[in-house]
Image (tube, rainbow, N blue to C red; front, side, top):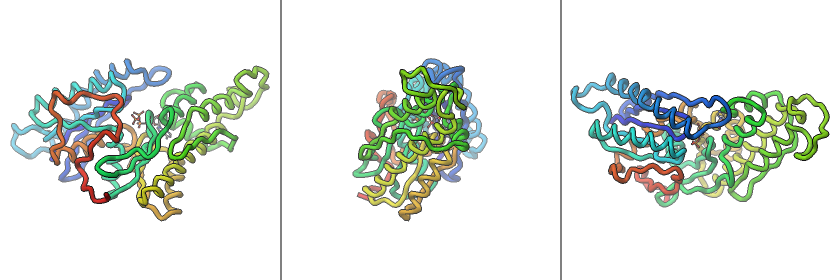
Length: 352
Ligand code: ATP
């Protein structure tokens, strides 16, 4: 079958077509780039409004080209969309587009949880049976594992998402959005300086480390205006050192909790999801930890890590196959849609 996926939870206006016969995933994405600062929800929604029809048009064109069925058949067998979590104004535009398309094409509508999609694309591309998943994305950071028909949240951030935390630091430094790749590049020339490291059981926190990083960059304590000149344009610790230390601590925290999750569940498979998963240092730490305990580690290719409609189409196809579709009147979006709210209909309950 062929499924159209539509994604638009925050910055990526994206449409994809997944062909389950060939396993081919066609993705078309139009990214929102803020002029200044971080993501403005209203501007992001305007971007969705402009770009979603365009990317959907290209995806459907691709589907029609690869369709050798009767000419009056719809080009796809279902329309899947991300229902949440994400920015409300963006989600509503995507929801409206998906409903309209499903109605026009007269095919089922599938509502996908964006965070479960981040997990499932890793399980799909690795062909793993029962992995633990570390979702390290912009607005989220958590560990998921399957138990009794749901993906349970084993541990999560107590404050901001990991990408958003990094982006807040880079905004302070004056770098443009998104900050993650810039921190990764700067960290290459850095040395370690002491920053907080906060793990509490299976949960973790980024707010303390982010304020400490800003303070280290500015020099001195918050109230100290006497900090002398230094190599840093901020007046404190060189920015390369702050970036390096930020990565070591933040990714060290995520690696520690991932290891604890593997040990707790007895799983020997770890998959990575989310845009921060594009970071080579994070991948290296996780791969090393898995290697040491004899676990398999899989990070999907970058186009499946950052927000993309490919993962929505792939999970949408699995859900459609078991009839996990939505009536139009039940298809409202949910900005706070948690992964553990989703009944996992598409998996054999083999590991219970
Ligand atoms: P969510 O999936 O939680 O809705 P999101 O919509 O913000 O998150 P993602 O595409 O998953 O989007 O992740 C974007 C984040 O990834 C941004 O915060 C960005 O700074 C970060 N990021 C991108 N590349 C890197 C990198 N190389 N290293 C670290 N962080 C990165």
